[in-house]
Length: 127
Image (tube, rainbow, N blue to C red; front, side, top):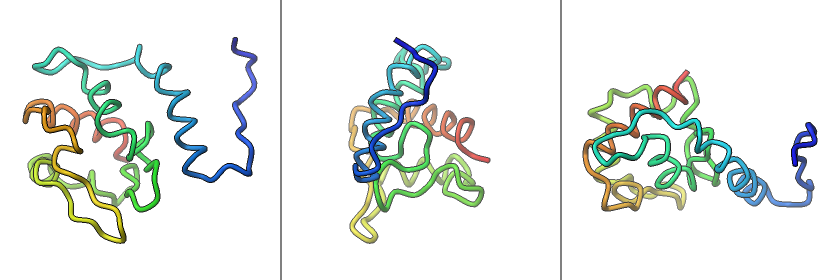
């Protein structure tokens, strides 16, 4: 039931826990608004939510410490798609304890799906 009041999580929860709870709450709300599908039939937004949002957050701001803010004006999404695709396909080595496995840890993603996810991310998060 929507009371019209914002969800406020107790300040005592660590920031990571608050973001994970917020992601779990927001994820079902975001699913109906997904954009056009790629070659798998799944919309890029759904692929992002399934394969990327756990670390990068629903809003691209980073859901875990050490994950870059994809919505930052000079952030990673300022790079061309082909450069981003190469990074995502190979993975990003750990820096300060945080890295990204190839294809975000989802080896089943095709190049077309990765391109669709990156286009979605650039459209939704890049400023």
